[in-house]
Length: 224
Image (tube, rainbow, N blue to C red; front, side, top):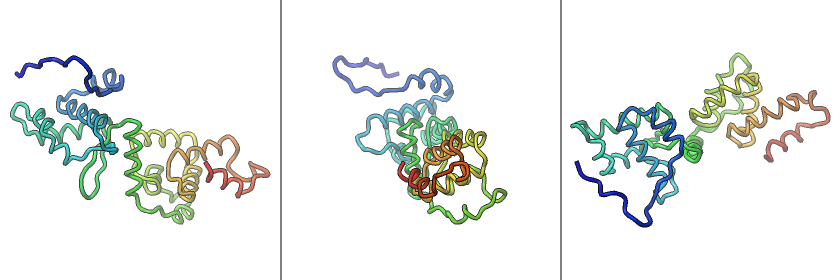
């Protein structure tokens, strides 16, 4: 065992960690490789000079310090890394995005989730608005498929928000709110949710909102 000489005196670089890491996440991790990889990614995201908020699988396997720490008890470092990443993604501490070139990992923080959603939206196919307009209540896809077809890939946090919306609003309302968001080129759940919340308080149909024209409604949503 190599003896650690202690942290030096004077000014040293630090990596901030949320308190939830110590009170909720770390106690739940039962695999040393998963803990090391999770900490490594949090360190990378906090200290790398690039603006990117993700790291590729290729970069991880190319990190000699990380791979050496995973090569314990004769186990393959590559196998340990793959297992650790899979567990972290299943646990929800990391988010995974795969493209034609590599697999990318994001820390499941506010900034990481936004970066993940941007990557997913940039790669999402152009939505087919006409299909949404013609679909009746029976033929519409479920809310998760509807979101992924028109707005981007789901994150665990977004999936929970969509489940909650299903309890608060009829399926037809949700589909129409997503349709309006797509038409206005505002492909985000927060935008669609604002439409739903306004319908809930002010009424959805024009009969329920006397004196307010479609032009008024369109401008109100479009200018948000």
